[in-house]
Length: 541
Image 1 (tube, rainbow, N blue to C red):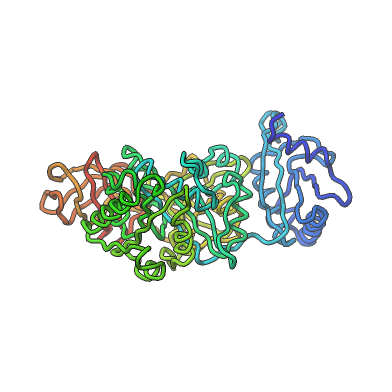
Image 2: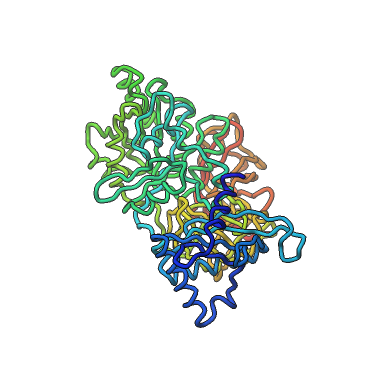
């Protein structure tokens, strides 16, 4: 028996007992179990189970009263979870976790595959997060220590010199498959009145949830890829999220590289306030560290940015001066933990920059399907806020249409929340759409919105690098929000040269997207690169 199935068997073995914390339900329906009088009775029952379990109850759904495996249809299981969530809310509790198993031959039609699930219900309302949650995008050349540095920050552990803390940033595929995860950020830690709140084991969902629950202020990291062939993935991470700050790492034993300049260009082209951390200071002499510091300062000045040495000017100056032209620079070591206290202080004090007022909007970055829950869309909320039960639009589909959907539930760092605001990285379970119909680059909007997707738009662009000239029909990949799509350029005057700034018409090659004036984007094709700003939107043909 697998460990997962053992969880189910343990709950069945304990069984329903008077004064126990296990409850069996074959199915819960809105019409029957939320009716007048029934809701209050079931909420009282749930509260009793939670109190009997010292703040935790186990609900087994899809079984008979005597614990027999009945199994129910996926749609019925989803409805049962919706009802259980409402009952928990009524009882001052929330669903912490759901695990599901398929049971052959016991679905409603007798020859399908039914679902049995174990839901853990905990005392206390669903989490309502703070308004100062900042999101940081990391960048830097491969082996320049960005994941190791973040791993040491979120755990407080020193690295062993071999990248031991880097492993904390790895994404575990089975976690995405088994849980309603919003694990776009590969690291999270926080602060309370006593200082940093760190993770003991970042691979445990419960540990990440604990940090979210205990912290007054959260810091999330969106890790990117350092290998040059994967620059497209890095651009997606930096452009497609609602980031507050960038963190660029430069290894003291290597210094700034071509990839360093590439990543710095993307960070600064998107006007993201950025910090440069010189890493691996323990691996070289003080003279070499000073040499790399001077190299970094030259690289920044070459792109008209002002370096601010934090060791000279202090954290106060860094917090006050950081913007799209002033770049704080500090020296760190994940092995000796040099500079980590300074980064802690910066991240605790830096103001949130990415919060945007207005209606809810979230560009979708990832999608997956959770058994018994359905389609999940994850990404960073660009503006407004969303609550469970909200009715939204999703699209555009390939034909430009939007579809109505309902928010089943919301999770952030494995912790279920009742609502989420701009800047949050979340996973949203949706009712009314299949996961197969959702694609990266789509957007979630309020149902009353009147979106107008486009195939074409006008933009002002700057060509950062190109071997010759850009003419009509040039086809790079455009990275705008979470959209990554081939598009044809038709520059005003017929051409753009390296270093030029000019106007161009941009036409997506395959399908329409929701694009708005003022949005910034990066384009890339081979060794050619540039940045742009949407200046005018053209209706779909």
